[in-house]
Length: 216
Image (cartoon, rainbow, N blue to C red; front, side):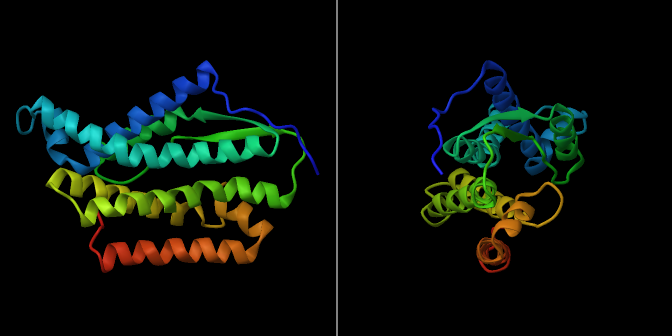
């Protein structure tokens, strides 16, 4: 079945939501991974150097933030490929909760989602839109891995470690076939494709945490 090709465009609202989500996730994970920032925030240990704070947020935005946002943009690109109208919308209450969770010291992030509508699509097309996010995270984990192996400095190693770990966790978590997660849509299209991607995500996540030592 043929469908109209659409170019990938971003509305002003969408660009704003993407930027705010990217920054909020960077701040949230900077608090989670650099507890000195939290201590300084509440006056427990004085003031953290500005360059240290900027570096922590920058590393988080370049790894965690990129992983989350490219996951969502992958959904958008594939949806548009299949003739749908698709836009990312940030969930501001969830972003605020993510920052609070980072300060509290635990992992939580639900920055928003890509919503798509338009022409009717098949179960296969819907499944491909859903699986695009987790597959993107697996590819990103592969791109970050050389930074771990060839790291010329501790900060590059940290960026590589965070990039690999977060993207593998994102892939595995989003492939759980429950609720609004991608896995539910994928398994309704193809059990085989679901099993392959979910299985690979879980195995690589387990290996990165237990064998390679790339846990948080």
